[in-house]
Length: 98
Image (cartoon, rainbow, N blue to C red):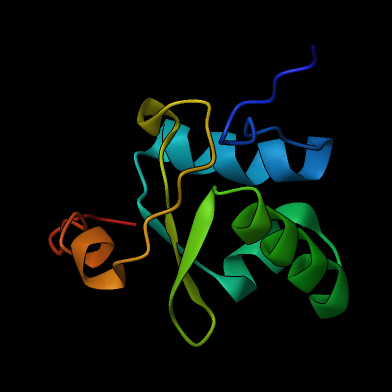
């Protein structure tokens, strides 16, 4: 019998891993669309594809227009998603230096 888990495992493409690892290495909890465009050196449309994929896979959650919060690796390998954006936003350190 083939059993499946209720959650999908979070995975990353090479471009997605660049975004997540860069954020994790900097200790950054939020990122803007323009930063992803610059980081990857891609068009806005290509960055939108990466962002959509990271959101679908449970790595990013939209905070506001063009601004996203990282669901960190410490949250585990399963796509559980944080549906409460206010709870995610409360984790952002407002004194954090870019």
